[in-house]
Image 1 (cartoon, rainbow, N blue to C red):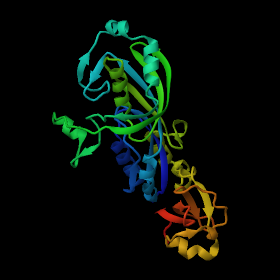
Image 2: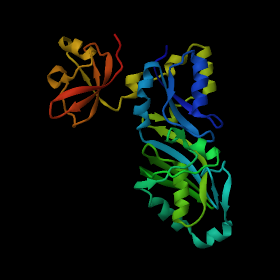
Image 3: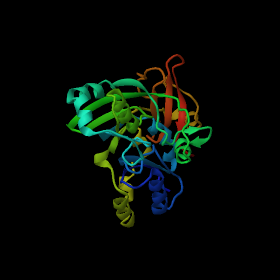
Image 4: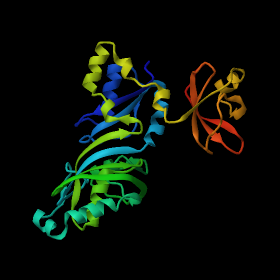
Amino acid sequence: MYNGVINIYKEKGYTSFDVVARLRGMLKQKKIGHTGTLDPDATGVLPVCLGKGTKLCDMLLDKDKTYKAVLIFGISTDTEDISGKIINEENEEDIRKKISDEDIVNTINSFLGIYEQLPPMYSAIKINGKKLYELAREGKTVERKKRTVEIKEINIKKIEFPRVFFEVTCSKGTYIRSLCRDIGDRLDTSACMEALERTKVGRFHISESITLDKLQELADSCELEKYILSIDEALEGYSKVTVKNQFSKLLYNGNPIGIEMINEKADFTNNEWVRVYDYENTFIGIFEFNAEKKILKNVKMFYEN
């Protein structure tokens, strides 16, 4: 069984579930999970977790994400992207009379920071056990709660009216479709997302991603493993400590580890997550530092006896 993470480049037309299903057939293993849905029309980075690596799924879901997007003015749809049913159209010339490039730039930049975003009806969010897009397909619209999201960076690449090409880095749970809708709303006009490519998820970058077809070639030539990132490599952003040999049994059983049991200086902030290894440099798991008790407490174990 393969364990770790593959940085997949999801091509247009695939759902995230399609990617997982194809990998299950390719790798001949069932334990595979993705780290966040990408719409079928969207492309880009989709980290996929394998075997014991599936324990990483929720951790990678929490990571910031970067996208390249195209917004188009003059159209609004039920899905908030260009593939949806048009619910409103405006004449391009009429829009141009009331908004300038400067208005567009100022409005887009005004979204920097934290804002309350209403998620789209066509999304995988569940309400009373049913996904919103399932309700939307039944012709139902239900009340949704706004969610707090953060736009960490937003850069306009070019404006070719009625289109705006921009790049955005945001927190988990941010819908770029809804951001496009909200930009239009602030400018008192219609807008939706025309194209989307995810370029980064945490440490996973598009330049290192691989298509399913290329992965199949590697699987056929038995070269697949070199493209699978190990679990601890996927977590390399966290500090690393090693536990002294005499405390190995405590460590393997998932017990809290006192700072006197580690070889490194415990220069961590309270609640910081740390990668913990045994004396032979075998990755054991993610532990959380408690500054008051001066211990590292097990959050997620990856080691198996």
